[in-house]
Image: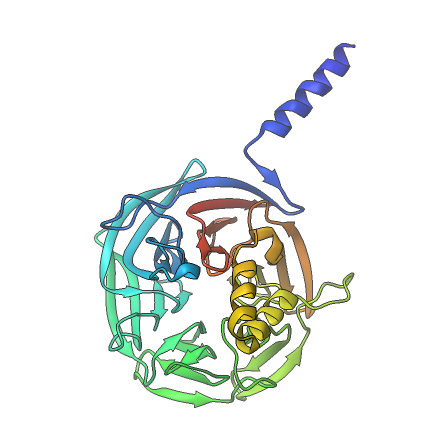
Length: 371
């Protein structure tokens, strides 16, 4: 009887814990991102700047949401200039500094390096949407510099750093979806067009990382969501097909359109989020072909759905370049985010805000301990 009571008590304590474990990650709430300047509260943002500094701090900023009225009802989308320096204090992300950049930023490409964070494009100011920013700490304060410009504006792209060059891949360049790839030399400021990504002429919001000396890029989409994958050989300026985004025990590919990735080690990258391909493809088709009452009815039904109904990818996926294979670290125990800030720091994964269904964001932050 005594042993039974002990087991029941242990079961109760586990069920009441604030943490939820997946197969490889133990997730907990890390708090809420504070309000932007001029607002009483932060309702959550997507398309944020994100990264880490000095192996200690997390940086997140910018992004967009609909603070006045739901965008589905015609509400105005607001983009922000706020940038936060955060530090993990006993599992909670606390603000060390909150500052504002001279421009509002969102949906640019973030790249964390050993010495700082690059942020490319992603401004609502037309004259600044080609900017390359560099974020560091100077005298223990956030230091944001405009260090260069691209020959085109940039949104919804992805970027990778290697050997003092930034590689800018796909997205919307000058407002048009594309598969073009460019390198930007941080020493000479030279911009060079490279071999385009194969298969699709347009590709926005893919994920990419430098693994084992090559650039690996997956998914993205435009009129439909893609599940394909490619490796870019930097030395030879050539692309090669690699595994689609698919788990060995599943029959269908997984869309990572809108997801965010982090580099775990030299051979592996982790991805959180991704629009469901079937739901996304159907919505784009209906929203572009239906007319009048039929269109209005579909929009009303579509945007009224719960986050669960959109079936965004909740699996935490890990790609291994050495084995060209995907595996799952379980599922996130919260609404699957897209366009969130995602940072890997000292064995922990931080998921900050993001969109949880079309037009709706979360202001919550999560920390996952990888084990």
